[in-house]
Image 1 (cartoon, rainbow, N blue to C red):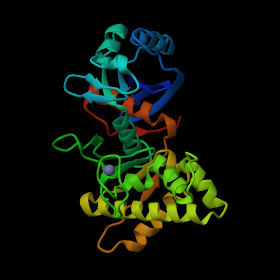
Image 2 (image 1 turned 90 degrees about the vertical axis):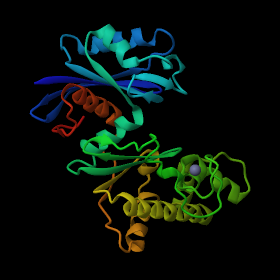
Image 3 (image 1 turned 135 degrees about the horizontal axis):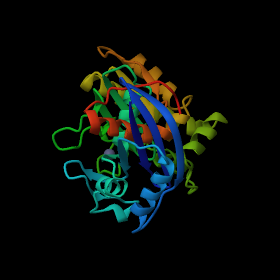
Length: 310
Ligand SMILES: [Zn+2]
């Protein structure tokens, strides 16, 4: 039996998850969360939180999520927009020195994707594409529990594939999926169509559509068509076994996910349309991804089964 610790060091909360691994099966032991320590003493405070959480248990390894650009070879954080104090540090080494436990860092988006692919909605499939629909749109192609990053580390940028139209994207291109479906863009497009400056959110647009607002419905229709086209492009390019859709916008399935899936099925010709499933692990996905990273650092194995939900 191995005890594995996942530390999901998020922008506002740090989530701690202790799991027991036995013969390829992961079992939840306990969880806790606390405000994320900030500033120069953050690593000391994080180590103290972790020690309290572990109490008399001794974890065999930990995984630690990093919100930022992580150099995997050195473990150094290159940039972190929300946690400047991590820049130039190797946070897993810092925590390892303080706790006396070996550990590895993992980029937060990667952690979420591998968790959903291996333990969540993609469980049982070897080839999973995980899509996060939030303010931006991110993607990760997870094969056998590892994210395929491409030759230059830039793979998975499904938010910036062109899906038609002339809407300008933050990346400089026009017609990107993100320019039509990104959370802030939905609200902005609705405001612009109505000629108001209301800083509406994606949820505002969904609620308006539910009330029967024709403009909101037209904007969502255009966005879900773009998502369907993006999903078909994905199938044509990588033929995934499962597509998992998470992120804030996935919480409005009736207006975002379901119409996009229906359109993808309707428009598919040669494509093998795989199961398209909503993410299952919610806000604990990052912590489970950190646990999988801990398992990987010990045994090189990420293909584990989860036997119990948090
Ligand atoms: Zn773009």
